[in-house]
Image (cartoon, rainbow, N blue to C red; front, top):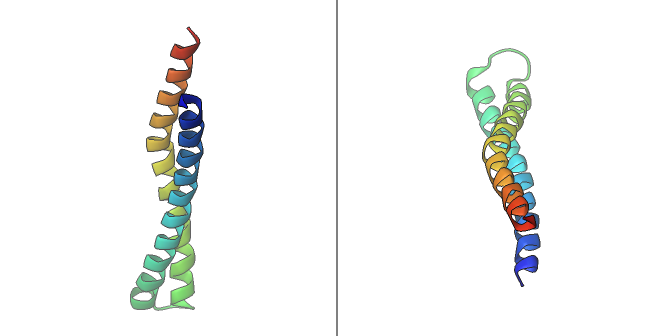
Length: 85
């Protein structure tokens, strides 16, 4: 049962990291669209803001995944090392 829970947690953790990355990109696009619609005055402001928002959202999502995901991944790796002793 413990092996099943360990594998299930790893799969769930991977899903959460991907979901976080996609969600931050979408939220960045929505915020960027609204920002561009109201504050950018040249070109196609909504599209420009949305593209910039998605890029910023991806960067923020990657940083979140590296910081928080890295901590949990190191903890999981440490647990594997301790089990093998």
